[in-house]
Image (spheres, rainbow, N blue to C red):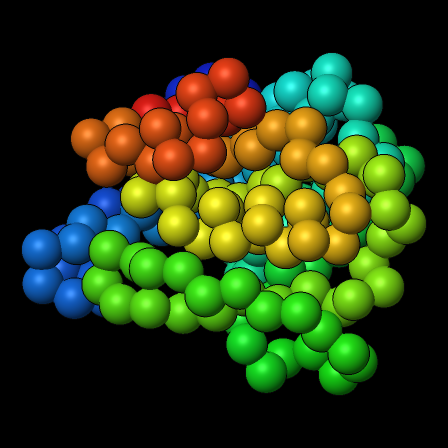
Length: 175
């Protein structure tokens, strides 16, 4: 079946007990591998991002880089990586957050964008919202504005939307 004929949800693989017991990992790699499905996803996210009129797309390490950079390219705007701690080579600011299965930190270069810039934060998945919230705090600390958060997948029962602000969250698929 061609990608254009199947719903995007059909390209999401569920992997139980990864990265730890009790977590069901939602794998987007089958969607990325299907050219038509990947294009449809990027087109949909780009349309939603364009409506928010951002100056930059902020993509969260690592799968948010894939979606976010393609969206930034599609919109003709800059891309800012929000990286895992210790991965950026220049002066960076850091924000710690809690995951469903531990703690981590995100970083952004301190000169990522000019104060007053409008951003849209993109990632593959919204679970508890901790990672996206950390990215939003980094944007705010650098003097930018978060116009919205866009996710390919939202795990509704984990209520990450409540942490980020109901009105700022857009998801393409909900599980």
